[in-house]
Length: 209
Image (tube, one colour):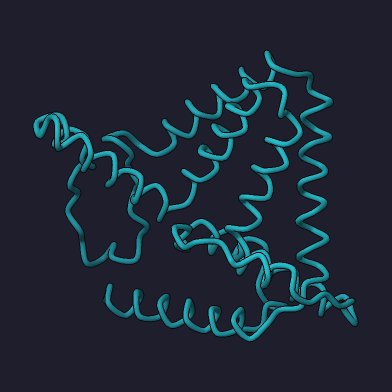
């Protein structure tokens, strides 16, 4: 894949649809090799490739920076956790996996309640086979959980610390991600992973026909 031709919208859609349940890359690989990009196009391609390939590492890095910045404020740590969870709900794979695990756990205690937590069954029309399926969590639309967790995290952020401290912590975390993604040289594993994801996308579209 030529990452230079990938737009920001395409990258966001790919991060939303890709599987986030895979473990993060090893630390030895994450801090393996750093070089300066030779041109703007090289930097642009490297940045998008690393953001996609090290997505789990960057997500954990943001949570770590937030937790480290508010180590003496338990409410802020809880707010950081809720913020990360609300962001993770935006990913299709994580939302579906979370709903399945919650439903499976509830089924052990109350099968009747677990049946209510299942997403509603919608008929699949051949003309709409390429349309994106609505994601449900515990029987509700995904955006309901995103709004609830986001509102709860905002309330905890505002009550536990001031807004300037939150902004500085986020800036430090995002700057660390930007620097790593800009100077980390994409390795062979990243290229092979990209080809594998392309094959899965093509096969998924073929199977929907």
